Structures are given as structure tokens and as C-alpha cells.
Length: 228
Image 1 (cartoon, rainbow, N blue to C red):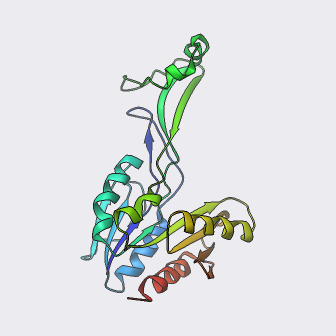
Image 2: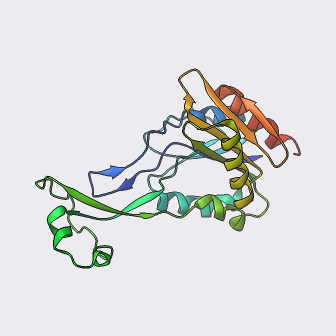
Image 3: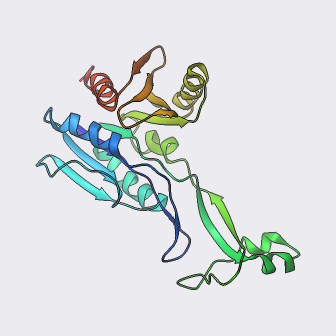
């Protein structure tokens, strides 16, 4: 079986030396990839330079990306070639449009004009005490997966912070329906530590609990191969 996994966290560039990113380490994606590799499956891992990765393996192909735009390009090309997508990557919700100092903002009568501008300098000056950064929403790539490959088995991830299990499962079920996914792995950042990872694998009629990254990987593996 050909397994496509995304892992780590994207970075959206402000200029050539600055960017907006997140704290995802790629650790869970690494464990999931290793679980499938250990059972003889072919794994393509879309990840980032900074993320944790499995050791070299004859059945492992790495695709290194950085931004949401890079991720979209990789997914469009690879999703049609795979049987399963496990979309564990922490994808940036916003990307920079334009960064300016506070004086320019105060002098602008129409803020919409600033949304049409972009930074041409390689490194934006840091002499101003205050800078304003305009961001725009990135596309929700998980919603496009079944358009690229209607037959792919899709496992998405939903991360919230300090909510009840009931709310977490409810939000996961909404994502399940909206994205035509097969399962959503629902987890809460406040319940994740180095040795503990509380999560629920949410299907249309099932909710399965896991408490470690290894258990999560085994649950996903079980469901992926169930009908194979």
C-alpha cells in the first residue's frame, strides 16, 4: 500500500530572513511513518527541514517543503498516486501580505491600498519601534484532497486547546463531514507532553481513544489496513 503522510509545521516568509511558523516538531508524523514502514508499506513523507524524520529506509521517500504553497504543489502531485493520506502537518492558517511601520499606516486613508502592496526589500528594516504585519488566510488544503483523488483514504487531524472531550469530538465530526475524511484524529494541546498524548480517532460512528503517540499510530494503522 502506498501511504502519503504530512508532518511538521509550515513556515510563511515575511522576508528572506523572517517567517511565521508554529511549534510542531513532526514527532507524531515520524512515529506514524515508522509504523507503516515496519509493516512493509511504501511511505512518502511530506515534511520540513526542521521536523523530526525516520531514519533512511528503502521504502521511504522524503519530500521537503516549507510553505503552504509548497505543500499544495506537493499534494496535488502526490495525492493521485497514493492509497492513503495521513495529514498530520500543522499547516499555517495565515500568510504575510505586507509589513510596514506604524507611521505609514497612520498616513494611509484607505487601508485596503496596503493590502495591494508587497515588500520588495530582501530584509525589511528593523529601525522602526513598531511594525504592522498584514496577513491573509491560506487555503484549507484538506478540503481539496478528495477532489484530487476521490478514492484516497483520508485521515485528518484537529488540534484544539483546553476544551472538553465532547467539544473536541464534535469539532472533529464537523471536519470529518466538511472534508469528506474517513477519520479525524482529535487532540488537545494541553494534554500533550513528552510521554503522554491524549487523542481520539473519530469516525462517523466510532470514537477510539489513545494516550501515547505509539497508540495513535497503531490505531491509525489498524483502520487504514482494515479493508485492504
